[in-house]
Image 1 (cartoon, rainbow, N blue to C red):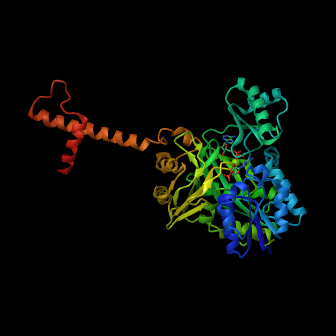
Image 2 (tube, rainbow, N blue to C red):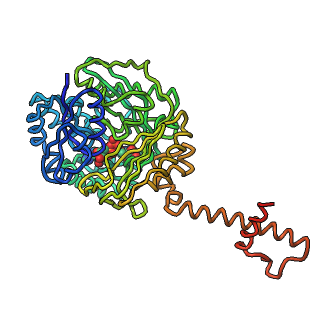
Length: 504
Ligand code: ADP
Ligand code: ADP
Ligand code: MG
């Protein structure tokens, strides 16, 4: 049985994993870069070791350094969190060679699913619907043009090694095909060291809906229902919720079965996520599999009542899954918002720096996964996500209301955060009504602008004053004729007068 786990990550997710370790009586080991000496994850762990300078390719991504620490402190296992080495098959293999348990799937599963073209082929073989497109890297432009004409424009050119919302290019017109593919190939080479790109039909106004799965080393595999992740900025998730407002029980069952089939096709063992793109008619297509714990895993934990990290550790201990599909059900509604150290009112510019004050929200139905404390300086080297706020309530409406009031309560000073933006998302009508797709942020720019609420108040005021004006005119029309300019009373005066009217 695993007694000590090294967490090869930082920030909120490192602490999240350590919490479950504590609960299970497992010792935790933190690794940190020179820039993270004062990070909360270092304080929270039972032991902590510096693994190099600030840049992640000199610390959090250096396999040798991490393995050396694991051996030195006799860790039985390594949890990679998300990002960094979590989807690195070489790392998973190396752990195995060194006799250290990698808390995640086999390197074979990581390899197969990490390459989107290979994954598409595998899914086709397993009978899982994939987005219409190519299943070989594009080599010949003429052939590509022919395929695109068959599929129909618009299409997406996607990097086989892509991730984190990067490596995608939308093509609307025939003239864009050749330059688009070439640009995508060189971008993919620069970003991922692999220039393989493929084509997918562009699904119009789609939803991103994903299924959480858990699979053990004994052939058992279950799904833990869906997460709706369509609130996105630059193909990156901003808000997630479960259940999905558009899901039906029939489609849920079918998608869940396909998610399980997808995982079984690569003999998956551990927690994983099957992402689907879904159109308005609830036709769904496999997008990719993330072979790790997901940023948004807490909403599933809450609604299904399962600690996913604990299950990952149990699976790594070779235990059989303790849940059967029919044991699981969705209870209530959970929403997660990702809080970034970014200035939403200045083009989401990163805003690293010293946190002066933080008052974390507390209360029933609120979970906060963070790592920032007052006096802490957020380094500029890493992902700017500083925390995740999750609310739960019996109904979606209540969960949204709770998120609104919780965001209002959440105060951080010293740095800019995306909290005000998230508050506006929670107030935007399409979100409130659960009628949104991946274009939500783009399509609702006005409602999501900083002064929207102020402007709305002015609009309301104008409507009131116009009405009061009308009443005043009616009144004066009774007594005497309207004034020469037809505008006997200014809106502002009328507003003042309105107060006395409402007092009546
Ligand atoms: P999730 O699907 O869990 O929301 P994201 O796609 O947002 O995951 O990625 C989670 C983290 O991993 C983010 O910090 C993101 O920047 C990072 N990430 C994911 N894939 C890659 C990749 N291929 N290259 C670099 N970073 C990545
Ligand atoms: P990543 O590995 O970067 O997470 P994904 O393939 O999961 O890439 O796609 C990320 C997002 O990009 C999706 O959630 C969706 O919003 C958009 N997207 C990807 N493929 C398509 C497509 N074929 N049609 C429309 N939107 C797409
Ligand atoms: Mg994805």
